[in-house]
Image 1 (cartoon, helix red, strand yellow):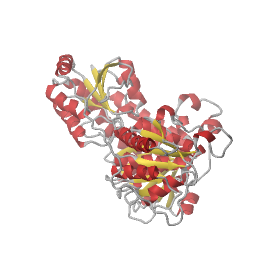
Image 2: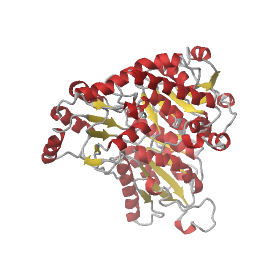
Image 3: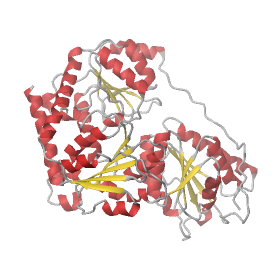
Image 4: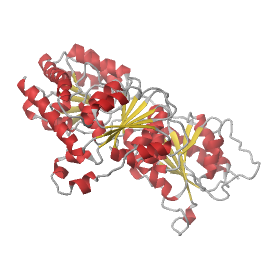
Length: 562
């Protein structure tokens, strides 16, 4: 017999607009699994590996902007969700995590599949709830519905994020033969009405007085989804008021009016003359560029951060003001109230941007084939409407070095781990018919190979693997690069190739080792197909490190000569 509060839970999810669930097989979670699978308005998929399942749900929620449900059985299954839960928390992505559990009296009694599941995700969820373990009283039924409503509402409230409900379940788990599931047509529902924070008139007057002294405003957007309204406001500020806008790839706000090649010069102090701002204004989440963060930390420039809920985020260590309002609202006000900024300041930044942009094609024509030069060529072949997923370590850094992109950039920079890159991209394919391109390193790719262990189509997925048979980033970090244990204990060299995986899962596969093979492979790489496609670019880790250093040195030589 399936208890009614479980059916009510699923009905509330559907009523509140949740229409996707990722389920992992198990017995203790059977009542939840069957209820989601049988609800006519919820699309349920089953993913066996819970770690992959959670990242797939994250990839879906990332695109949909709505919670996706996760369901797993009791015991260590829930622990496998943890990497994706942490990523969702710091990326502010809504998830509703439902973990089946043993009844409380059986925890820590050497019963099978039992761990301490209550609040198992600690501070990496917005809140953790415990579902009632019996329903003999009407108040318990009321309480169960209240929990579900509160959890869903909380997952959506700014900042969005994962919410956990631990659900103790008693046998029997399975319905009797012929038992019908009666989902309530009008389950108990309540919503949270929110309002956007706005700055007071007095605050705006004080800000305007402070801005009258500012001649060199620098705006740094952090990670976020593309936003045409914000993009338009930033372009206006750059063109009409000489504001310098520095945009990492993951800001999704790059344009002809923004600075995107800053990593090529901010690491060199000899080029810092006239680059220091009077004020830094930021919004969004993290930035990739370490050189940008170091530059702003060393500049000791006052920093204002737009954060609608007023939380402190002091990335550059000089936070002086938190603006508890929306970025759109403040940028609208700013373009009407900010004095025109120092033109020489804007010209200096834009001159460096232009020089690097003009130099890069020539520099790459003079280097050997490797990851960096391959990506410089390949990025121009990716369709503008493709979603572009980047794995951590070198993939996201290379793309950031290479400047402005037209595609939406997606990368798990909440915790910046290599786990889950494949799965997040797979989740994205479940939400769109547009091409989804994943650029990944070999370590990240093979680490998450269970992303493809399911029965769902992903014909729009294109995977580019930068296979240097090692964790190549460690050759570029001064500490490990100087250690005799580099290859065995930091790079962890491996000889895997993706051809066997492609054969196992029925993917199209091609390997390239030089520029000519790459150009031929890309001719029809984005042509429609019934299966995903893998392009493996095989290179040498030591050679890649040399190429990166050569490109950096060539660019700096050009900038120093100008």
